[in-house]
Image 1 (cartoon, rainbow, N blue to C red):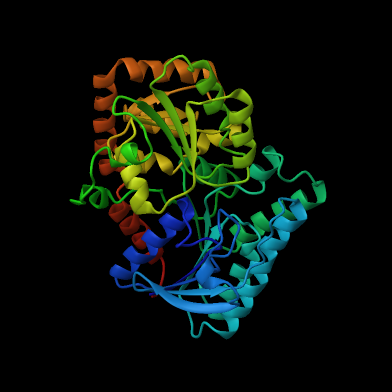
Image 2 (tube, rainbow, N blue to C red):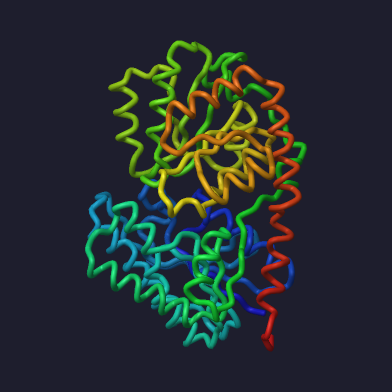
Amino acid sequence: MKLLILTQYYPPETGAPQVRLSELAQRLQQKGVYVSVLTAMPNYPQMIIHKQYKGKCFCKEQINKVNVYRSWIYVPQSKAMIKRLLNYFSFVLSSFWYGIFKIKGKYDILFVESPPLFLGITAYLLAKFKRAKLVFNVSDLWPESAERLGLITNRSLLKMATWLEEFCYKKSFLITGQTQGIVNNIKNRFPFKRVHWLKNGIDVGYYEKDEKFVKGLWRVENKFAEDDFILFYGGIIGYAQGLDVILYAAEKLKNYNNIKFVVLGSGPEKQRLVDMKNNLDLVNVYFFDAVEKKKMRQIIEDIDASIIPLKRLELFKGAIPSKIFESLALRKPVLLGVEGEAKELFIDNGDCGLAFEPENSENLCKQILYLYSNKEDAEKMGENGLKYVSQNFSLSKITEDFYMELQKNRDI
């Protein structure tokens, strides 16, 4: 079987899609699938082309024995909607050209990552040229998410995007989704399409390796005390996350000298939140830039619990933030500000932490103080978390299930 993954995001960028797709590519290749990746010059989330790729229009490289083809993308510094659309469409066009003229031969499967939804245009046309079956992967329901977050308000654009979404689903051999909420949403609207839950997951074995981590090293390097109780957020600092709740909780807990809040990552909301921290004089809040996966492990080893929030929207009741998995794999309890599917899985079923009402800083403070005052319970939740993700979200099992789904009703 030959499979081409089309995605705007891929390592060495950091982020949930990047990790998920690179793990999927490697594991499918190990199963004997010939995997290639067509992606953009790395720039996300800082929106700056990485140094070693600057000035290049196209290039080919290997990452973990997978052939990766990269094409040009326009990277704006402005957050204006027209600039963001130019960013998306520049890759739509350049990836189509590169896929047609530079990536030779027929493929059996073309797997495209959405969002950005517009990449479905390239995917459909490339699949025709490559005589490939189209697999459309939905990690976020666009344009529904963009509309509810207020990122797209133009009715004509929303109408066009809805038409494109439906067109892509109808033309797909298989639709995959990252959560049960996404899968059920699509099944309800398109009952005659094949839809598969392609979970986010974790390579627990990676976190069990005997790496030479020095416990407490990150704390020492960043001048945190051994008895500091560190609450951690690591990931995209964007609109959907609703990270104001962390800063408001920090303001309410100012009198607890050894409760500290760490916010790590990059994104469009970071500068506003840094300004908010300064205006509120929050000496208990610390911002750090995004780090590579190996360094992230050292940081999570040294924190006490992870805060994982989203805005309070009906849409997010079907969301499972991928940052949950790394914390649980390292036995750290989570404070989960996400209603619906994620709460049911990781709090109600897995007992991996505590839930708080999204955007409710009073409720978050209450749960923080419970973990702070009940260290044994917090430790037990961390142990539960490792057990739960090992049993239910193993990347090896996820890949095997997806591979078997690809094989159904196919002559490959």
